Length: 103
Image 1 (tube, rainbow, N blue to C red):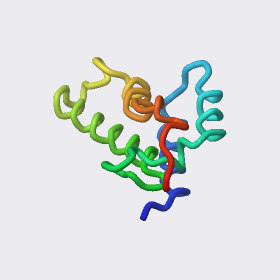
Image 2: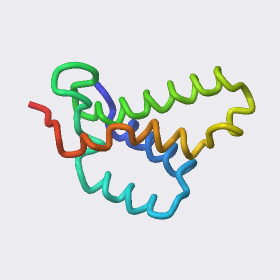
Image 3: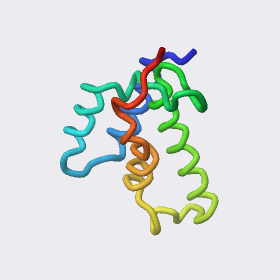
Image 4: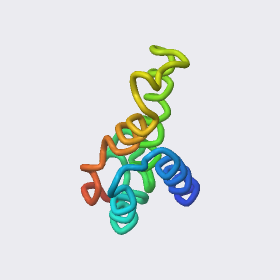
């Protein structure tokens, strides 16, 4: 079982560290005012539990960073900024906000 507060804090720490573009604060506020941090990632499959959507997003972010660093080495930031990796990884399933629920 996920510790939702720990998962939420990890997400917010990564988001706040790297996402600096205009409106980032409003987007984070939107996520907090909806079910992003408590929703499951899917109905029956990966992380279909409370907090699963947020945990899945962190997992995708970490995997993306790993793949990019493996592919491009220490100079990966010449190709993709840390902000780009955070936005793509953390927010790739933002369309699932208010979509799934835990039964």
